[in-house]
Image: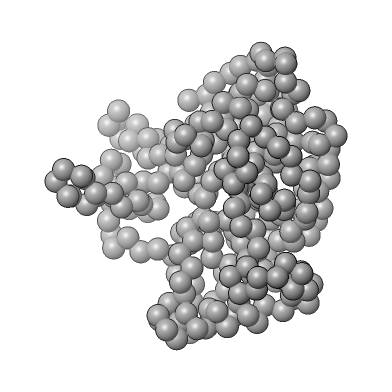
Length: 288
């Protein structure tokens, strides 16, 4: 679904933010692109949604969009969640850009915790909302010390955390937000995407921007950048295993699935997390 619209609410500045704020965010974004994986501080602005609900990603989106853009907003893979609908409505209310639920039609995709199943093209920009941008926070509480560790490329504490997980549990305990090395230099939190999505970042042809409004950080993965999960030679990184389960709507077996339980019967079933991809497959099969 693609919706065209005009800039109707002239009581707001175009794209809500004032022009100096947008310029400042674009300058910090350029710095982030120039230093892949490095967290660039920025003066996070107030928006009509609470910090922690996507303000970092939304500020990136609002500072980048222009009249020719088409924006898609997803939350945990869904275009219809409250968070996705609210952000999409704000974009529609304050700009003249078109919005869509089709991954292929979008020029900018703002996402909370998923990368679409449909491969993105080089002319698309993926913007991820980030609640906790510091990958070392679980092993180092001091912001000052994490900056030193990043500067010295000293990630021994994270390697030790990974080693202890394997010794105690025989696997790493990172289900989402699995720490990755970006182009062999900076350790990065890829936002709480599932491990299933992490390999999609490696040598991707498109630009990925990550924004944390509450923590006031922007960072980026430029196209064709190495993004490698932390792993040991004898304990390689692995994505989620769904034991050959299939989506109960479209029968896909090669997508990230969510486990659901029927409250009446107790029956457990699986469903694609990416609702747009699931609908597309169903339409191609003629199920709709």
